[in-house]
Image 1 (cartoon, helix red, strand yellow):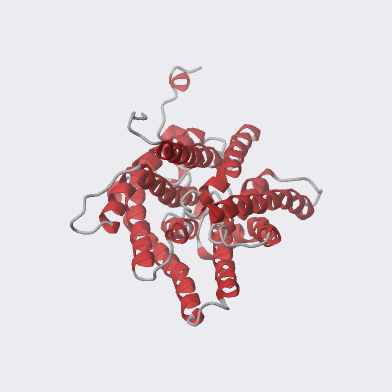
Image 2: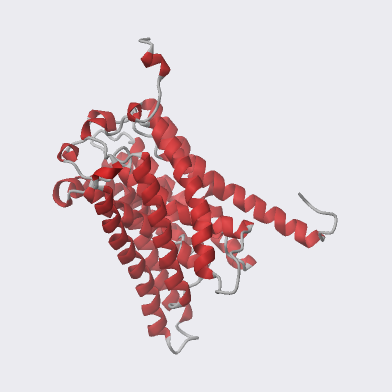
Length: 386
């Protein structure tokens, strides 16, 4: 509520933050919830558990980040800004949940969310405090961290029956449509996600525009590449789900500093290519060789485009700063070390978390109950024999 003593500038600022929070909140709850709802018998769990771990994760992230980023004498400050940072941080958990989709019960997901939020916040704290990485850049590591944390956990939950796609894991036209709805909301609000915490107005404008250029090109490229990679020339919905978003993921690091739209568009095209080619090659490779079952394909939707974006960010950093900094080589190494550290912490903590999740106390699902809502949700019409 606006109090009578508020100035006009304060009211305008509050309005801007409220709109930004609304955009990010819709992206996190609605976008990710429906993006994951592509399996035909796991729609309740995909959307419901997404809300559960997002709501819990945001509260936990505010406390952990408040503890880490506040001095010993200060109290933990709760504000709209801290809620926004927590909402962005919790997307790491939602991305990891995509890799585990259908194979983990709610208690396992809650434990994973608590550990992952703490690990990602710790990774951010190291990057910001010791490596002097900008806050916006440290938060954009969320895609890389969530992907490799989730893949490490998924390695422990792998079952031999997952070597080939089981019937319940497949989609149908209705579940694909729900997943496409999530893709559309993520696509619409991704410019806000990439720009929400940028303070400088010129950089914020650049971030919004460059993100839009990248996701526009990646969406068009997704349709073209899907048709070209199909034997009969038809478009596959799974390619659109993944590749249309890849440009926004890749641009997260560099969105405010890219000087020309063509660079953003090229990056969007490359990210889309990585996503489409990854869906053809990596899924089989991960399943058969590394024994990692990535249900939602987060590796080529968020992980590889995120790594591509991190590498491009370092290259652009060197090009833009080469004339003004004498210690350019050192700073470039810091940028490289930052995302490599994030990846290493994600893999390490994910590996430990996955090992813990195999303990009997979590009542791990048998493989016969994978990808099935009836393991967790009540279906009254089935109970009465209709």
